[in-house]
Image (cartoon, rainbow, N blue to C red):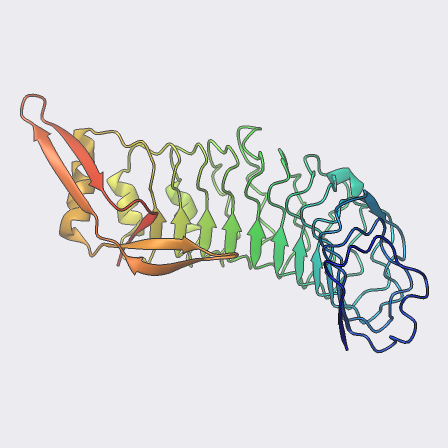
Length: 349
């Protein structure tokens, strides 16, 4: 049974409002003006949508959903939630998807054991909150062994404590873009060590200046890492060796000015796409070997990448011309790259 009451200007619900709806499985109350989390909701709900009720600031107290023991999907996106109390998610151990994105939740506003009993949770969305400070005691996610997707993007977070990702043995996708992880100059080398099954890592727009050696150590399953729009001047070759299954690296709009041939030798023969758009290349003769490599020593292809919700997908080919001109007086080279106004990457065979 399905009931859609979205966009109905509802501000509150009476305790007996759901009488006679014992078999209701899906309830949509999104985009209303609810001033608190409704109580006495039907006990057989599988999916509950309370997103977009952003008027009054809300807290989630203990046992707010405990009567709905079959609940699998809970959407609280943009609901002006500020605090989660201990036991907020008590009783909903069947939950698989929890969306808490775009709220006002601070890092210290989440009790240490808030998610401990959500053993079946696969998707946890906490992006666009206020988690600038993250508690350093017991890891929040230590019992989320089924979690596959974690979104912590755009939280103004400047530091993530060591061990924060402990327990996420099955995590596949991690979104950390739009934070301030570069404000402490360098990331912790063992930060991602527990994430051995992650295939997608997003670190764009973090002000990162450098990557410590072995930052990706233990991430043998990583296939895509995005570091676009940072301040990185080099990508250590050791990191490529630590990721044998890597397929795509986005280093666009950083501060990379030069690529050594030793780096090229490391990636040749691998089916690896590297996006270097928008970097401030130095136009010196040292770039000649790089030009020769692009010009025909290896099979190079260029792709337009279109960004979807969780992944980049190749949709078309784009032709790029690389022209090297020599200054007879200084024997110096100038590189001019002419391309369509779109993102591109280099793929080696």
